[in-house]
Image 1 (spheres, rainbow, N blue to C red):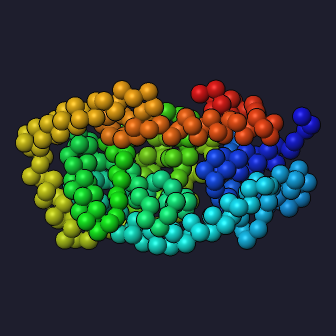
Image 2 (cartoon, rainbow, N blue to C red; image 1 turned 30 degrees about the vertical axis):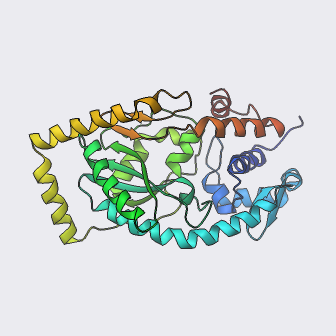
Image 3 (spheres, rainbow, N blue to C red; image 1 turned 45 degrees about the vertical axis):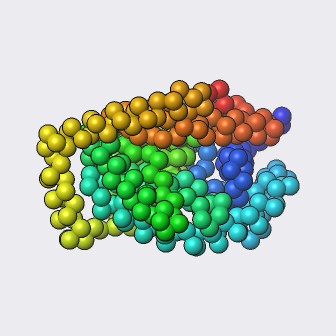
Length: 313
């Protein structure tokens, strides 16, 4: 393969990762989620897109979106998904506020496809990351499940599919997929805990050096005095031996319930006293395999220690 400018290669690597998810990107998104070994400015990326014949050969750009050449149908799909976002986003914010009102919830983050404005339909699931008080992961999740069932009565599917304690924020898996999962979180409540989460996972910058903060910023949601008092009162009632017993009981009950799924060879779930990660189908490995295949096809592997780690995972 002939020499390729490192900035051009970084831009194409970033678009190739988006292509795994059928996701054309804007220049701003390419800049924020740039896969490179050091930060680059948005102007430098725009310059590469405008002036590089190599990139122009491989890319298609229209209506503010950029995708691989020959994949232009994805831009129409992205535009349709933006329409779905306009319906789903206010709903996600509304239910995020309800989750924030529950006992022991310290942070609420929007995750999944909607967090990057790529939902499959206007009735797509609303995925959330919840961070809880220490030693109350399972009780906090139980309260969230009550809200999940209530929302279903209104035809809304809420998925708090990752719950973790505030004293267990560092992720064990440190690969490209998890770096994106952390970087894509949209914090809705608990901005201070969100910053602690990002600080505990500073390794993300080795993959995504421009993504030091949230791409979408919804500001800090305040509970309001009445809800804050109710929340503190409920927690005071459960900060007792009874609360400890209920926490252990719920943990053991759910561990027995999910034991068969945990044994699945395709499971990425993690269930312990500090985590409830209900990912019984591993989406990370197929995504990284698809990304590695695209890197090979475009002659972009290996390019750095970080990419080597991804493709040999």
